[in-house]
Length: 476
Ligand SMILES: *[C@@H]1O[C@H](CO)[C@@H](O)[C@H](O)[C@H]1NC(C)=O
Ligand SMILES: *[C@@H]1O[C@H](CO)[C@@H](O)[C@H](O)[C@H]1NC(C)=O
Ligand SMILES: *[C@@H]1O[C@H](CO)[C@@H](O)[C@H](O)[C@H]1NC(C)=O
Ligand SMILES: *[C@@H]1O[C@H](CO)[C@@H](O)[C@H](O)[C@H]1NC(C)=O
Ligand SMILES: *[C@@H]1O[C@H](CO)[C@@H](O)[C@H](O)[C@H]1NC(C)=O
Image 1 (cartoon, rainbow, N blue to C red):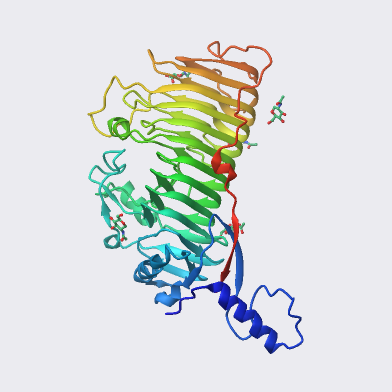
Image 2 (tube, helix red, strand yellow; image 1 turned 120 degrees about the vertical axis):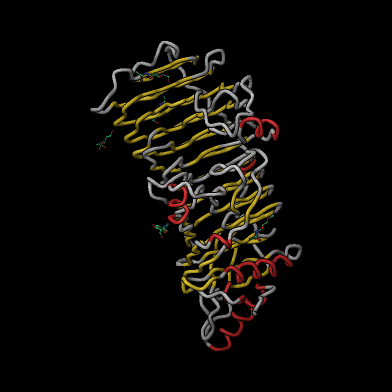
């Protein structure tokens, strides 16, 4: 096993010996890239923290043939590298190859780096997957009441974790799980691809994620999270393959992602009915920016349906949806309690949509009969502006709850071009209140045109937008 503590030193040695070998090279020449007669290479990548120590998966017996299990290699690598948490941290490099593995847990002050053409393949051997209790804010598993499988890549109670690469791939090989789901054979809820719990300072970036068994990226009970430059791809008919689900988290930035999915591209959540109300942890201070979504049967961004801990201060801008059911959808129900408030959306381009605006107060879907029928969700302060939509079937379906209207809905500067398959009732509004400006076709009477104005969008900068990436060096 080779570990390279103090890589800066080995890099310097590499440069010096290169100069000695090629006597004519000027000492001032900056050597970046490969060193003659040695496999030492250098890659630069952006991250919230750089690491002092590095190791390669093959140092721990990894075999990248797509058939050999690397579960032990990943687990022992991360266990060894966890020793460097208080000494500058460590990065584990996954080289080109196909690395089959069961689930493994991350550690603090740690980077998992997937090189270009590195593919992590999730094991389809169910006995490799740990069984975990239900999440406290959900009370039961989504697929099955008893609990859930652990996720392929998990982190719990961590600080400062980076999962990144040069567009390497993590393939969940979800078809095994989708078949079991369709046949009703699951005793526990399917695994997520990546789940980070009770953690702070997380980066997940520059990777391609394929075919998750269910949700792809699930940060929960965590804060200060940057998710950037992910390609997330699943068949558009695969069950519950949500792309990115921030769940009871605060200070999150999601940007520059491309998502094709069988469920919501992004679903913002905060717990389910009485369990979510009791746990009481909202998702707040969330930026979603420059994301492209394809999801014919679901939303580009859903808020809910699990929102019982509250969802507040969400800022969505510069998104594109293509052949997607709806844009920024709110889903809730009697019994959820909680709130969805101060939501700001601007600059959407929508091409081929069933609904531009869709808010549902009768989503149903309860964890058990123990929900409180008096727990009414509060939905207020929902702002949309600068939207161009083409080939749309319905402009809006906005459905509040009787005795619990959804209020302060604002829509401005929105142009909707209705398709050939247009429906007569373009704006179907019940139990909602708000105002509009410069919207075509004409909105419903519950959202009267109030002349010229723009709906608000905050001007202040959230702290997560001030986080700068450092340029990290990786030598291997
Ligand atoms: C990961 O950690 C959780 C607890 O934090 C544990 O239940 C689970 O078994 C661990 N998974 C693996 C693969 O070690
Ligand atoms: C990343 O990889 C995926 C599939 O391997 C590919 O479709 C995509 O174009 C790549 N993106 C970049 C930026 O290289
Ligand atoms: C209206 O929205 C369009 C499309 O986003 C944008 O180009 C235009 O500047 C907006 N108009 C105003 C007055 O903000
Ligand atoms: C318009 O939307 C319909 C589905 O409602 C789709 O079949 C058709 O291909 C779309 N047309 C264009 C030009 O995108
Ligand atoms: C209008 O919306 C209500 C409530 O969502 C629904 O029950 C009704 O079927 C809709 N009407 C039409 C014509 O789509």
